Length: 274
Picture 1 (cartoon, helix red, strand yellow):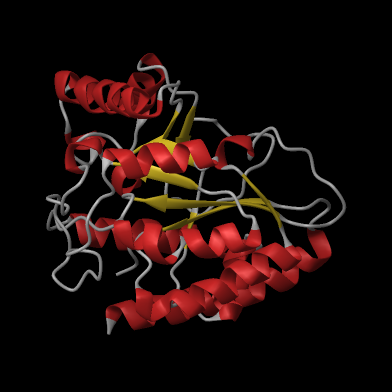
Picture 2: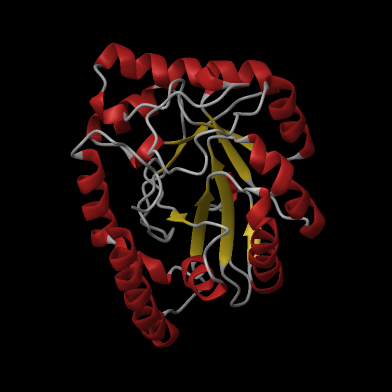
């Protein structure tokens, strides 16, 4: 019930804000979307979403979102997938290839090739999914998809001590660089958990880009280690998806912060809307 109420409030706020943006936005927005798993049941819904992006937006690699120059009035969008689930490989990547769309996949290196062992809600649809193995990750990198860090064990980085924080940030990067054979300079923070201490440690570990789960557009004032993203799901209806892809859901940022506080109060971390 709480989830439904939050979602309805967010949807209504985003519709109203989209009207404001129509008259006040002076240049195209830059937006990063993030998914988790993509089940076969919702593969066609995901296809419709990607068809919209291919038709209406300019889709770029996540690491290009800050530097990419705008052209015309098309929104610039980057697509990311947290947790590198095999369901993404099986059901999302074929669609992305079909439309010629780039994407980024963030990998929790301590779970490569097996089911996630980090805390997940009992009803989470991804709890029985499997993280891609090393050959699959390397193949996607060779194909041009961006491989991003998602730490080693998928913890909330703000809960760690200094030594643990260094290991999660440094080892995950080293693991991925060993797999893909080149530098990995971007990270998606698990649960979006970051603060000034995490920010400093992330920079020290050699990352140049850090992606949160705060719904915010990318503009000229963005801190490159605190770049916001909008959560999406193949289950989103096309209207809600379009509002997210155009940045209208940035108006719900205070509500998202409240939801995360409610979830984390019991240490039942989740990156999905409650």
